[in-house]
Image 1 (cartoon, rainbow, N blue to C red):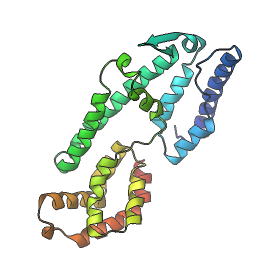
Image 2 (image 1 turned 45 degrees about the vertical axis):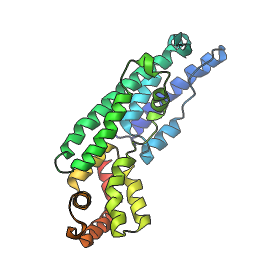
Image 3 (image 1 turned 180 degrees about the vertical axis):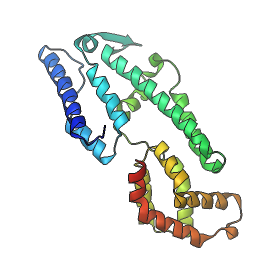
Image 4 (image 1 turned 60 degrees about the horizontal axis):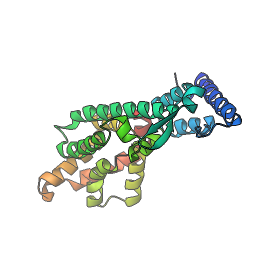
Length: 248
């Protein structure tokens, strides 16, 4: 189902409205520590702008549908801090989803290991560090910063600055215009890592720029074709909007 279809919007509106009504009823009954009300317009705006994707919004909507009085009013004490059962259940599900997402990213990154070993090593090292931080029981993690990060997860873009920074080292090396570099980078950052890697596999200019970086770091600079690299960056700049639209 397309995210901009009327039937999808109607479903989203109904789920959000029902959730907000439940919260409002419990507020009138005097219950505290209730979740904030949700803006359906805000969710639709995030989908339209690519700030979050349909999978994340659908997971969030399922969490809203699970909201009920018992879960919202049952208190769970974890190492001296109190949470509602609803908060605990949400955290557990988000933790499972995030672990699975990172595992998928690590697996998909293996396709880059042979052709782009340095970029692969940087990228997977970051992912493995993130995965290690997600290890352990939910009881150990819910009072940590992990909980705060997961709370914001559905409404955030996937960022991989360290990975993209390696991509742009050579752009600065050849003197490609700063404003164009930043525009390309900002557009690529709107892709999920898995989407970016599909673009890397298919787009010849993204591939060439990676090859150029690899040559800069593994061979003498005199053996690198700066002119072709500049052309690749220029072509990428001119086509970046179409590339992002294709893979997002």
